[in-house]
Every structure is written in structure tokens, then in C-alpha cells.
Image (spheres, rainbow, N blue to C red):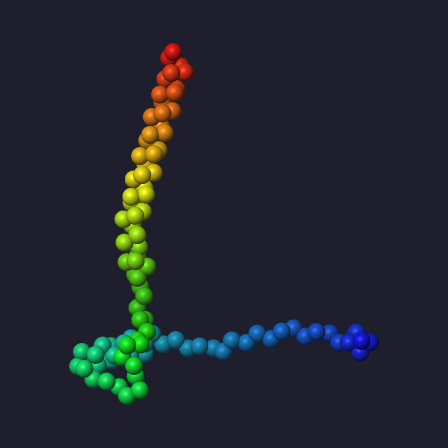
Amino acid sequence: MALKFFNLPKAKQFHIPYRYYDPVKEEREERERRVRDELGLRVEGEDPGLYYRANIKGQFRRAMKSASRTSSDARRKSNTRLLFLIMILALLAYLVFYR
């Protein structure tokens, strides 16, 4: 126990290896894959069903279009509820002030 008294803990090391992203290479590989698919060519060792979809631009917006119908329904219900409350408050104000 006395020997651990002078032992100071060291800071934990955090190391992330650098990653290189080449968008030109990714686009080229995507074009090659599409051409191979159109021509019906196969590369050995490659599973045709397990492609990574690199282009996710706009997918969230497309997915939300189906949800927008429900959001527009909810907005419409909220607006009618608000209009109904305003009418009730106007009626109460009329009864209080002009009675």
C-alpha cells in the first residue's frame, strides 16, 4: 500500500487513426458498379446484394413526405381547435362585457 502512494495515474491515451476520404474515387467506383450492373458483369468475391448506398442526399426529405400528410392533418386539427377556442373566448367576452 505504501508503494502505491507515490504512483501517479497516467492520463488515458486516445488515438484515432487518420482516414482519407476521396469523393472522386467513390464516384468512379459507383459509376463502375452501375455500368457493371447494366451490362450484367460480375466481379468475383463481390456480393451483388450488399451494396452501400453512398448517396443519402435527400433521403430524409423523401421519407418525411409520407409523414407530411400526417403532419398536415395534425396541423389542420390544431388550427380548428385554436379557432374553436377563440370562438368560445369571444363568446365569453361578449357575455361578460355586453350583458
